[in-house]
Length: 77
Image (cartoon, rainbow, N blue to C red; front, side):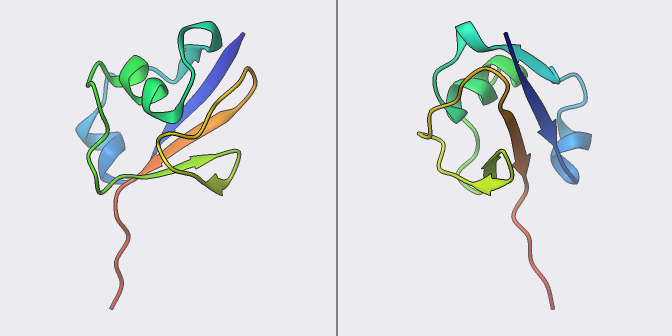
């Protein structure tokens, strides 16, 4: 009954004590996963979210066995 949570790049450094797994019974959306894993109510507007390797909004529903990942904005040049 778990959802795997991954943080990448600067988010991994900025939130070192974030949980890497949350109880699927305690969350309904990507935003809920962020709050449960970090203790921060909402993800910053610039954070990119992914559910099972597909970019999704923070309102996207989640379920047991999902993998939710959070990325900082990506730029290039």
